[in-house]
Length: 384
Image (cartoon, rainbow, N blue to C red; front, side, top):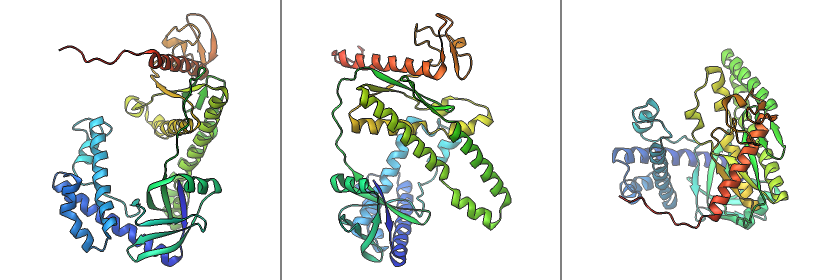
């Protein structure tokens, strides 16, 4: 749960100085870790803790800086093993491996309950800074968010600065609803022209969002070419507006899909599109549309909303779902006449291409659920 801090000018200066000092220290710890081959957290603490204390960081803040650096390297190594940063020898992978991890001055800094305390009734927090303990720092959030904080906040919170505004990202542990036996599945076909198409007939068109993105691209190009102070000021004003709009649209689409599944007692079958950006090869004009496609965010929103509502979700292989007929199962590249039209070469059925694909995904989701539900054979290792 993210809440907005409303500090006084003096408090804002202290928070800004704290974030910059903590992230400068994190960059130094990262250099030490890189030079020593990224040792374990205990050994890294032995080499850096005393220096961090001399820099003015509190005991807990120093521990959090070390842990943040070690976690960043753990994530980097996991991405390298998974191939998310390219193959061995690629420029992107070499660039990631050849230098220490750096932290932005406004990057998030974690706080635990020793360094941060909440007073929900007064909507204020008491937070540690380099200038001492700041008491009475106001925060603002919606009534529903405040209820979530009171009922479920637990663990660490992150202080982050974005465009001069400070936020606290608080961890809330919300219990999941029990998932029952679904009465069928709703297939969800994700795309760029139609953001999401379900097997129940709901279609979220992406026309308005795609037009908005094109206008933003043209505006950014125009302002960057202009290069004046007012143009740069307008660029700063418009930064992240596109991502915020896409996020809001994804929230609304995911809420609609999960609500429909909860109302009808069905599960949700989603495409597993992991690695699609690396697999797909497109012409240059199409790359912007592909890399602006927030399919992973939409899938994440559907999954976490479904878990809160007790709706079953399965991820299925999307291979050839756009070429397979939902009626007879015939697969043919020529079945997909155009982006919107599907005509089966086997049985002659005519359908909207995305709707047909969503029905195929719904059947695959049911098959995957049935296989997991009825299989009682333990996994065995192959004989040598």
